[in-house]
Image 1 (spheres, rainbow, N blue to C red):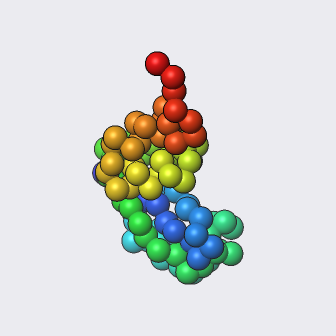
Image 2: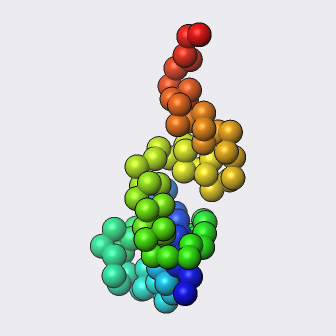
Length: 99
């Protein structure tokens, strides 16, 4: 069984990150306003990103990791811009490090 990490953009521009073993069913729940208080008040929703994982644990670990990232870093991750993800992880978006 494959587990899917997904990122939704809410009507207010915020992101919702979750994981599931049935993406179609989970997206329908979000669209109906069921199963998640956060997204029910921020509809309509737009699916921005999906990624498959072999285990629920792997999907959950990535979900929790992404939830701790800045918006800029999440956008870079979804775009597959690993240089930007690395730069943002090092704090280069806030200040330049001196050598």
